[in-house]
Image (cartoon, rainbow, N blue to C red; front, top):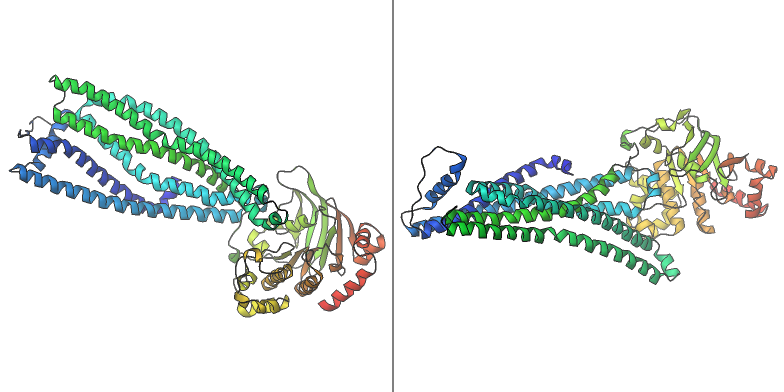
Length: 614
């Protein structure tokens, strides 16, 4: 975490200098306290012993020059001088305290800004496999709650860490100057205080870990309910989901209370131990002073004032240790997330698409999902010549979508190879490779933005004319113009203001605008009604024109004219050929054809779709 301070070292330097001056003013004000009373109410003049400077006479030297600074011709003039000095010291100190707070706030804000940007950028570069294995609520918790905890720690601790150790060192030095013997007695208590604070800090870190994990669970419940609100309402699960949330919230609150108990414990413990030390010293040194031995009254008063003043930085550092331990618990989670290996992505604009002149080929491809032992693809081999249409059919779980996910390297193969014009796709830069493909899937991805920006997503050079032309080619222009603000209409989260068919046509318009050499269609019409399917299929026919296409089809009517149809079962290609060739074999494809359409009706539908597309 402290490494993140370096880009903003100038704010840290300013804060450090201010801290040193503030501590100097603190020490001066504390030192003056006893001397003021002696100067104003005791007529005795303080004389400087002319012996050589040594550790033993530092106290006398400081007392003499303090006396000289305050002493005037009369007590009234001395009082006036004291008032001026106090006003100047406290005014300058508080001006510096204000400036230091501002500088530390700037430092803290910049660090948190950098950290959030880094987390978000890293999240975008993580492979799809990470999102398969982890909850999205965990990432939200890292970026918001964990960073907030780190933010709170920095804002509360940097000033204390800059000021209080120096303040304590200065106060301790003054105590040694006044009485090394008494200071040695005080030091006996410090290791005990440190031992207690250390073990309390470890307990705080453990409880903070539990609290943060519980918070992720709380966000997960909330996220699932918000995303599935229609199902919750449809099945009347309000009470069940509320109970689930209450249970998670109760666990979070319980761990939060335990952490708070540990947080507040060091301060009262430190003060109790400090007062105990003060009482012992008061009894021991006071008896000696009354007996005419040891320190004089002024030194003893000064010693007690400085000793009592030193407990405040000790309490602050004990309290801040608990805060830092909580931040460490959050930082461990955040940096563990940042340590997750990302995809080797580069700036897409600076990367050229790989050349595609001949074919895409799968060569004995085998694939196992990360963290699983069962192979999902077994020796898949086929090729897709440029300009041809290859369709994948089969029952659910046969491996169709997995094959499509391998092309843009959402997943990597276990063995074998996937090549473009004979070159393994693992040799290409990912950003450049993915520019080769356009994807339209059943789950259309739209953003809470305008229609225009959703169509132009990922295309930096899109003009209004090109966006409008893409919308027209996707059969989307008519409904877009009927929207309240046309292309400037915000369509809501996930395009909730649009129907399923309208969302699909926007996705097709986006793919048309991008103009990819290779098109991937993953059951793009399976969830649509007949009218929407007709419009979407017409747009898809436009999109497929003169492109290389790999398509997963739930409805066989969309793939009758594919150049190659691959039939998959349990991760293996069991049949391949054209529609007529596969029907003639009376195999698995013929079985799927019969149960879906029952014969020649399919041919009539295919002819109609083909005519419309042309």
